[in-house]
Image (tube, rainbow, N blue to C red):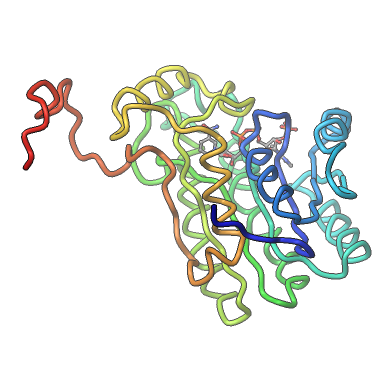
Length: 272
Ligand code: NAP
């Protein structure tokens, strides 16, 4: 089996709430490959869970950071600079939109809710990248998480879809700015995964079951599959890839028409 050694590499993981978090599925293979990891969390209530999850890792750094606060972000990156002096990668797996925006039609979105969703889910990538890039003195890689609703209407996703569109556009502009510094910036557009954030989305159950039923592979993806793609992008395996949105969705995004029965499904394989 092909293996990648990340011993000596240092990375920040943002957005682990529990073992179901996509960020945790990304952290696991990175730690197994020898990378040293720091974890940022929004509030004190998450610290005990993170301490338990990371108990077996090599000297993990745990730091509180609400991404809407510039002073929290400054403090977080000051801690990383003092501890490691440099940084190789960042996983940005943070998003939020008020629950009401998923439950009410998009046309009713309020100004404050628009700002909140944009700030937490899109601007935070820019704010994090500004600070991270300064520590990426030997190049680096940044990965964020998006969803198909950035480019197509997905009922209920509403305001978060608009924020994800801004996030994906930001990935391209950041990648352009930082390319000469060998800092790569990419997004993974993941199919539905059952997480805490997903539970707050009205209609998520239907989104999940329809994606599984109708995807090219006739199944849902797993958080570990997202973790493996992120691993590739964050490691030298992903060298040369930047400014991209890569899909880990069992092919769902590439289908232009959904049929109840697929052609050939009941006829057996007639190919030569
Ligand atoms: P999750 O485990 O709930 O992670 C979301 C994280 O965002 C939580 O740790 C949450 O902290 C954090 N967060 C929210 N507001 C924050 C703030 N102001 N400052 C710092 N952190 C904040 O859910 P997840 O599904 O793994 O989400 C990770 C990413 O994947 C998100 O960008 C999400 O949109 C994306 N994604 C998810 C799916 C899916 O189906 N699950 C599909 C495609 C993309 P708290 O727990 O403290 O709120």
